[in-house]
Length: 290
Image (cartoon, rainbow, N blue to C red; front, side):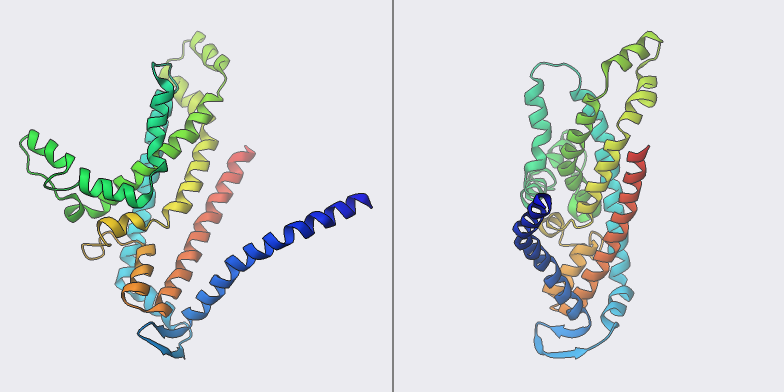
């Protein structure tokens, strides 16, 4: 009886927070679904005709949707490759004893704590500016013509900025996994004549597999909703060359004032994100079982 009473008291104490969280999530979702089925425009808010799935049809058949979908996939996959490969390399480097190791680790991890808007402004004005940027100065030193990164290579520029932000996160997770590797295994491998490459392929990399899977899962969920970097640097342009699904929904809602179409796009983006998340969660589950 005492155990039942304790559980009931715990549930009663947790109920307000659970209900608040439930309302915080469900109410906006229900409103978004409702708006996605009506003709709701901010310029004509009184015209709320029921359209059925017409908003979804318009959004899916919009040529910008396919460009945004491809850009989203390219952005996510490219950043994942850069952060995982770079994270493994930095983790191996930071795991070695060196002078000022603690300070070096702090400097490597620091970019992760910079706000996306600030990071985008720094890259836009200090690095990628075709006149006064650091890259332009390096180009001139070697006698080459500076490149306008955001105009000529907008999506690649966004990938660089986002990868720079998420590389410290991957490094931190992978470094933690690397430090949990037993030194006895490394010493035994060295005694058997295994070189660094053999140790990396057969010992280090399999040991880091779970951490790599976790990095892929967490980063993918956040990378699907990259927005601030695009808004600050390229505004999705030129054209739709750097527009992802998140920015396309923003464009439809706050630039074209089409709340109905934007709501339909938001629901489609949520469905796609959940499909990706479920797929990745299953991969993580299988990885953790092995």
